[in-house]
Amino acid sequence: MKRYMFKLALVGGMTSVLFSCQKKTLNPTSNTSLSDVTAFETIDRIENQVKGVYSALKSGQMYGGRYFIYHDARGENFISDDGNRVTARAPWEFAINSGDDECKNLWSAAYTAINRSNLFLDGMEETGNKVAGDKAKAFQAEARFGRALSYYSLLQLYARPYWDGNGSKRGLPLRLVGIKGPGFNDLAAASVAEVYKQVIDDLDFAEANLPVTIADAATRTIRAHRNTAIALKVRVYLIMRDYPKVITEANKIVSTAAPFTATSGVAHALQASYPAIFSSAVNSTESIFSMGFTINDAPGTQNQLGHYYRSKAAGGAAIFYLNPAKVLGDASWKTSDDRRKVIDTSTGKAYLKKFNGGTPWLDWAPVIRYSEVLLSLSEALARTNAGSVDARAVALLSAVRSRSDASTTYTAADFANSTALVDAIIRERNIEFIGEGIRGLDIMRLGLEFPGRVAANGVVVTPVPSTNEAYIWPISADETRLNTLIKN
Image 1 (cartoon, rainbow, N blue to C red):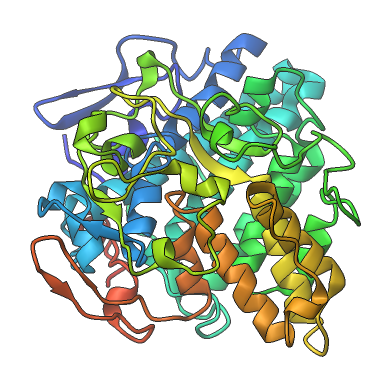
Image 2 (cartoon, rainbow, N blue to C red):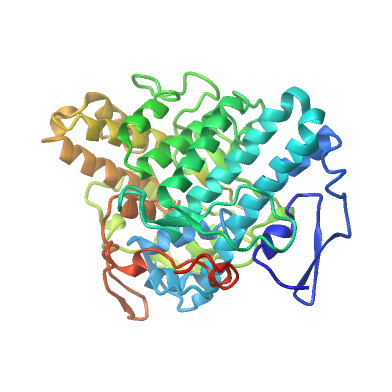
């Protein structure tokens, strides 16, 4: 049978609609489980399809590990100590080609999640809505949240930043209908703005229809609720530089004054211990959305965060260690700061130990934390009140800093102007989210150049300005080979 674009999107397109693969040729016939006719006949079966969307999102090639790793590798805070292209060396060197596995696999993983969402939404329209009744929109909202997160994630690597032409540049193929077989390859790329519009539409629907809260702590961390959709909108609008909308969205889940907490829905708040967020408190109210793993759905070899960032003495692969000249050497980051406790210097190099669970590295992957919402709101307030130093922006920044560094409390007098305040917020984000894939995103949304670096074996990577074609990844060679309407 002819190979076609969504070979991976079809595999597990719905949790209970499975497709076999023999001799690298797809057979789009269910051999092992429910047919798509029966997949929506009961509430339990419908919920299983929803869980399939989350399962796709936490693929090791995406939010199971590599999506975070690629954005950190593109930033300046990590030094590569492994020349193997299989373990993110090419992203670190800004040497990604359209035929590289990293480029193809992440693209395929994201579109797999998108197709699962689309297939689910199609199935709900055909059958499931009648079966689900008053639960139908909540199920649809989870699928649309997953689709929004996937499209947003693709935009951050395979498309020019929104600020470049106000979204007018080439974006992505915007697929909104589920694909079950060949014949749907050709689709021109929508503009960056059009894809972002769909992301926001999906998140608006999700906000309106997701449950306000979820009683079980683990479930509300790994499945979306209303505040999850709001928090992702905060991030998306920050990426788009739409600061007034960042403020509008963040104000829905951030109180007006310290101690900052969410006043509706899940009671999000900063946790007292920063290191505990990544161990015993993975289900805390600070963790808005995470990828949770068990031995039955581990991210897989060479995908896990701990595998990349832990020293060999601690059972990791020591692929990346912290650059002493960058965030690790930030003079504003005091040695007494609790965030220094997730740095391991026992072997002579500095390794990140946020993800410290040991083999097979089932540490939960943090997609969105409450501290990010606070700092995004702080930055948006500082930028929209450029004539002065915004007091609430300072208080939000201070809340994040003082949680880990009790000796520091910022006041407006600490900043000469709003520019100095914004600079401090960006530095804080760099410290707070090290190893969580945020730094590479911040560099791109700010239009900065990616700094040069030198690998442990002496390989030099020159700076990559925002005008360089290596600033973004090329579209997957699988897509351009099979989709005649798109090219790099």
